[in-house]
Image (cartoon, rainbow, N blue to C red; front, top):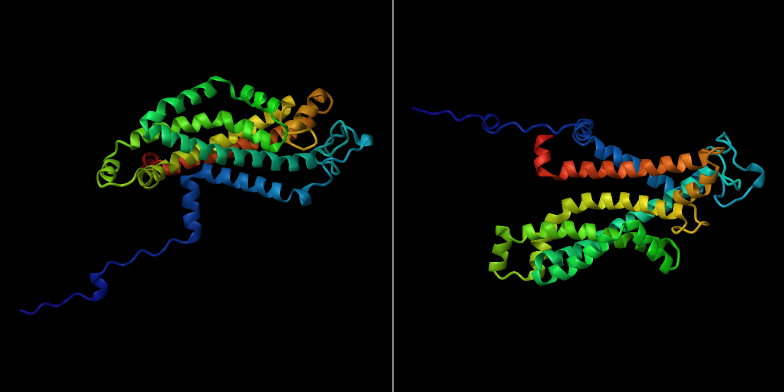
Length: 298
């Protein structure tokens, strides 16, 4: 009896054709709409900050007493303040300050908090000293601690970033410590320790990569909190110097004229709320995308 072999094409399953780009984009938007919406808003704000010299209709520091507290118009899109300065130009330049503060604080606080959290969570002898210092910092309200640091140090953008970083570090430390204390008991860490892997190698190869997802989410919330803290400090007069346009400074200067020129604080407040909302949307989207339990449900 002779047997006939199947054709080669029938023996191998047909490969699935690659999905078109628009199908993949639509699927990604459907799975994580908040992430993409937040990223889109932040990209537009970042472009506005980078292109501020060209987008601003006038010099943000130019004073014109004859144009004091003008309402929004074709010439002054956001109106003018009590000194006749263009609120639109000042708001656009203020975007640079807020995004710089948010990004810098998130980066510095995450790096310092991750380092201290790794030490406290993995080395039992360092746990108590580090966490007692963190508990002491967390016992002081963040705004009060930042005001105290601002009163001691010289005012400026770098001082504001430092004053906001100090209260934000304990939050990152506590998160990383809790995760490390769980990860150090995992079987793959025990196996790496048994085969003689150095402590530095265990921390960098086995523990630190598993902290990436929660740290990314935490960094977005730190950035949003930092932007709000900078606005609060500037509004209270202990943040960014008055000569530098920032959303907090604009609202602080316009609070005495709310009844007759509400537009002075309206537009900076809207931009501040939009920025914080976009960062929180990115954080929620990253949480949904990076959490494997949530990803299976989507």
